[in-house]
Amino acid sequence: MIADFFATIGLTGSHQYLLTRFCFQRALAFIYCIGFLGALNQYRPLLGERGILPVGQFLQRTQFWDHPSLFWANHSDRFVMAILGVGLALAVVALSGLSEQFGLACSTIVWALLWVFYLSLVNVGQTWYAFGWESILLETGFLAIFLGSKGTAPPEIVIWLIKWVLFRIMFGAGLIKLRGDPCWRNLTCLVYHYETQPIPNPVSWYLHQGPVWFHKAGVLFNHFIELVVPFGIFFPHPISTIAGSLIVLFQVILIVSGNLSWLNYLTLVLCIPCFSDTVLRRVLPLSVGTPAPLGLVRTGLLALLVCLIGWLSINPIRNMVSRRQLMNYSWDPFHLVGTYGAFGGITKARNEIIIEGTSDDPRDPGARWIAYEFKAKPGDPRRRPAVVSPYHLRLDWLMWFAAMSDYRHHPWFLGLIHKLLEGDRRVLALLATNPFPDAPPRFIRARLYRYRFSDPADERGGDWWRRTFIREYLPAHSLAAFRAPQQ
Image (tube, rainbow, N blue to C red; front, side, top):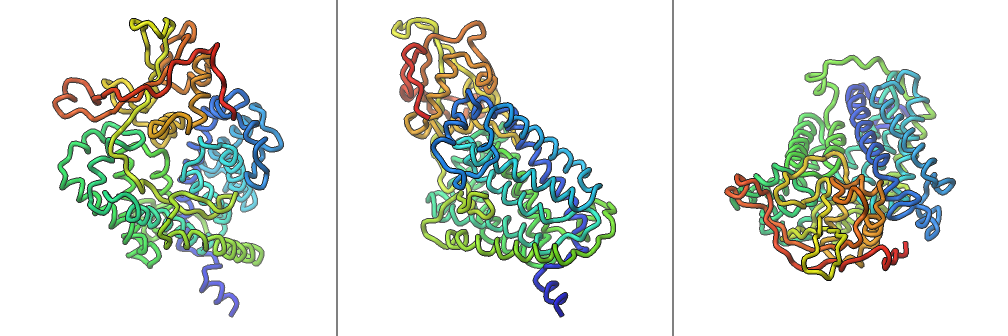
C-alpha cells in the first residue's frame, strides 16, 4: 500500500525516463561548461581583486546568509580561479558521462559541487550576475542533484519538478508581457524588438525588415506559446510531446533571431523531460542500462525535496497572479525557486554609448578621438552584428542597460573608465580592440548615439547601422583628475 502511494505521487523510480535523464544531464552539463568557461575568462577584470567591482569590497557591505558563498572563506583571485577551474572540469566530467561510471554517490557529489560552485559565484557576482538565467541554472542544477545516475531509476517526481521550472519560465514570461508594455497587447512589440534587443545578430537585421503583419503574427505566436502551451507539458503523451516540441521550436527561433546568452539553450534543456524514452528512442536508439529501485533513503530525501519546493513555490505562485508581477526574482539566497520573465517592456529606440579616448588636449576642436570597439555590442556602423550566444559577454550586456539612464545609476561604469585610463590589460581583453596599444589615452569620454538598422539599400552598401549623435554621456576624464567610485 505504501509503495502504491509513493507511486501515485511520483516518489518511485520510472523506467520511462532513463534516456530522458541521460539527455537532460548531458545537456545541463554543457550549460554549466559555458557558465564556468565565461567566468574563467571574465571574473578577474569584472570581479577580481583589481576588477571593476571587486568581490572583496562587496563582501564588506553584506552578510553571509544574504549571499552564501564559498568565497567568504577566501576571495583571492587564485582561490576563485581554482574553484572555477574545478567547476569547469566537473562540468566536462558530467558532460562525458564519466561521473556515471562510479555509481550514485559519485554522480550526486559531482552535481552538488557544480551547484555549490556556481551558487558561490552568482551570490558575489553583483550586477554582472543579476540575470534571470543565472537563477534558472541554479534552480535546475539543484534538481539535477536528485536525478540519480546510470544504474538507478530516475525519480519521476524530479521530472515533474523540472517541468514546474519550465512552466514558470514560459507562463511567467507570457504574463509579464500582458501586464507590461502595451505593445504586447496591440501586437507591435516585434516592430521594435529585433533592432533594440540587447545584442542583435545578423538575422535580427533581416527580421526587422519584415512587414508589420509579420511582426504582429509573431507576437500572436509568442502569446500562444507562452500563455497556452505551457499547460500542455503536464499532460501525458502525446500532449506533453506536442507542447514540448512547440516550446523547442519557439526557443530555436529565439536563438536564431538574437543573442540572449544561454537563456534559450537552458530552456531547451528544460524541455527534455517533456519527452519520454519512447519518443526519444526514435531519434536516439541508445541503451542506458537496467535501473535499480530507489531505496528508502532516497525516497525519504525526495519527499523532503517535494515539501521544500512546494513551500518555496508559494511566493512565485502569488507573484504570477499579482498585478504587480516581478520579472526575475528569487526569494531565497540559494536560488531554489524563483519567478521569471523576459521583455515585459520593449525599448522603442536603441541608444548606444560610444567610449572614446584621446591623447590630445580635449579642449582642442581638432583633438583626435578614437573609439573603443566592444566584442558584440553595436559600435562601428559598418561592422557586421556578432553571433555570440550561448556565450555571455557581460560587459556588452551591461553597456546596453547603461545607455538607458545616466551613468551615475551604474557605479561600475566609472570603474570601467578608470581601468581604461590605466590601460588595464585584463579589462582591455574584454573589448574587441585596443585603439591605444602603446600607451593608454590621456582622456576618455563617452557619447550617446541613436542607432537604427540600415534599410536594405544601405546594407548592400556595407552599413548595418545608421546612427545619430544625441548628447554627451560622460565628459572627458583624465587619470590625474579621476576619482574612483566608491564600491
